[in-house]
Every structure is written in C-alpha cells, then in structure tokens.
Image (cartoon, rainbow, N blue to C red):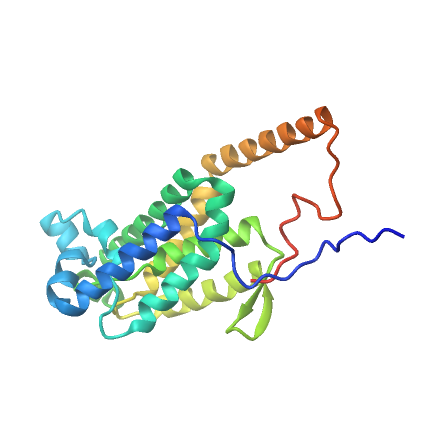
Length: 249
C-alpha cells in the first residue's frame, strides 16, 4: 500500500530570510549600534516627535523612527526583529518584495500619523504625546500581525512561547492590549498608540481597494498554475499546495 504524506506539518520558523526582511533587520541592528554610541543625537534627530513633525516640518521622522530602538534595552530591538523575521519572511514570499516593502512602510507611517493625530486631540491624557518621542518598529510589526490574521487566520502561534493560539485570536488579544494601554498611555519610548495605529493601517490597506487587487492577482496566479498543471499533466501530491493553515509558528 502506498503511503501519502500528511497535510499537517509543524514549523518553528519561516525558512531562509528574504531580501526586504534582511535589509530591515540589518538597518535596525546597524542603527541600534550607532544609537548606543550617540543615543541623544540619534533619538532626537530620527525619533518620532509630533511637535517636531508638525512645528518644524521634520517629515523624515515619520519613517526613520521605525529603525531606532532604545539603546538601554537590547530586548527592544531583539524581539521586534524576531517578529519581523517570523512574520515577514512568508509574507514577502507570498506578496513579492515590492508589495511587502510598501506594506511595511504603510503600516509604519500609518502608526506615526495615528500617534500625531492623537497627540493633537484636546485632552489632558493625550496632549503629553505631542512632545514625547516614539521609537521602534513595533507599529510596522503590528501591521504584519494584522496581515497574518487576515491571510492565515487558522495558523497557530505559540503565545509567550508556550500557549498555542489561532492567529486571529492572538491578534485580537494583542490588539485589545494595545487599545487598553492606549486609553491610559502617557507617552513613552514605544507608545501603545503606535501599536494600535499599525494594526489599523494594516487592516485598511489589505481590506481596502489594494486588498481586493491583491486577492484578484492571487486568484489569477492560482488559475494560471492550474492550467499549467493540466497542460503538462502534473497532478498535486498529498500536500495541498494552497493549504497555508496547517503549520505552527
């Protein structure tokens, strides 16, 4: 009797690193080393400060803050880059480097704009954000998590490296944490407002017109692949090529 391989598998990593993810990690780590040497200069120049963006037109901070991390905590850059690698590699393979890089930038800039808008609200709880500097890639990372929840909702993630959770449940939990933290946020190096902004930006970008275009392209590619299989008499094996929901990350 011929035995076919199971459709279920376990993976504790996304595999070989992809170009955009590699560049993001290299730039973050390199700038982290520079920040350790001149923390005040780097954070002041490249960190996101709403008052500097609005009042002094330092527009570059909307992007550069994504690559700056706290020089006093190696865990800050370590966990962010671990998340970029774990969730970004497969998204880049699926989308291609140009779209992935654009999505990462949109989530990061969206998180920055969300922080600035909230800092301009006429409330005591949010006014302190106007002069607070935000740094870190967390806003873009939360966007990657949102993409995973939309594309791989049934995949399992080891929450706290112990408890297996479906991706969509995991994102709901971290989103709720970000929202509740944002309600009481008084600012800080890594603001909860930016986390929530990254989730929102990722959702709108994928669920809006661009998300529809992406799905159409995927369906076209799938149909082309099926036609090629029929043309060359190629049959699928035991593992479903399009089944992306049976792995653990």
